[in-house]
Image (cartoon, rainbow, N blue to C red; front, side, top):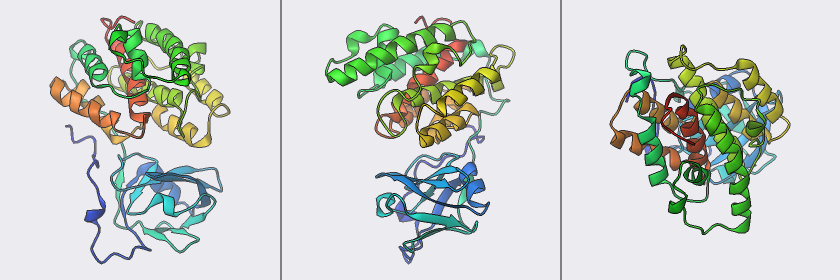
Length: 327
């Protein structure tokens, strides 16, 4: 992979010193956005907690996550040797820039944390747009797909519906039917190389589906991520309508939850989980399909279904440079 992306998929608790104080766990990595939030005299409280991460909201409405060390790097997350479920919702938190403290006495030391920021591929390594094999990556994603998520919609749209096992519940069927119609419209627009994010089909995906980050938001995040980076790498071919993206984000601010909205704004400026940056790098630098497929697996492994939903949006966005992908 290009050195332009800093990876951290393998951090684990065994990397912490054996004599560490469990009440003062250390941070292994901190995303640039989370670093900036905690460096500015942060005060706030826990607004959600799960098995892999907890989320904080600051008094100035800043949103950031604290995840386990084995979670993918992300600009909005601090990764530390902390059990997220050990800190309940409502717990007060504050930071002086050197440590993140919780009212129950737990503290996360920040001084040794590596600061992470996602990047696109090195421009010197990017291959010509007509050499990027989006079609092969799309086929690989559908072949590797598992679970009830929005890659199932891609199978319907791109002619692989016969591979989709009809084991979903009536709710899942209704959800996929609704999502597929909107995604089909978006995929058709992507085939023409450019479209506004304010079209109705895009807005219908905001807040759609289950999850702390709803499936529709995850799809849109992957789509926004792809469009932002394609515009950065191939500006003469792909145009990004900033006003329509701003309009979509303005709409989403009142239509989905605050955590999902914050993460959506990161995608809109090209910031996603580290495996997605790896996949982008592999595709745009012409890595072998085996490498691309490995990256697809890593994206799919994110969360319960978020990774696959993000991947679905990303692949649809990438078809903007692949006219052979017929929706």
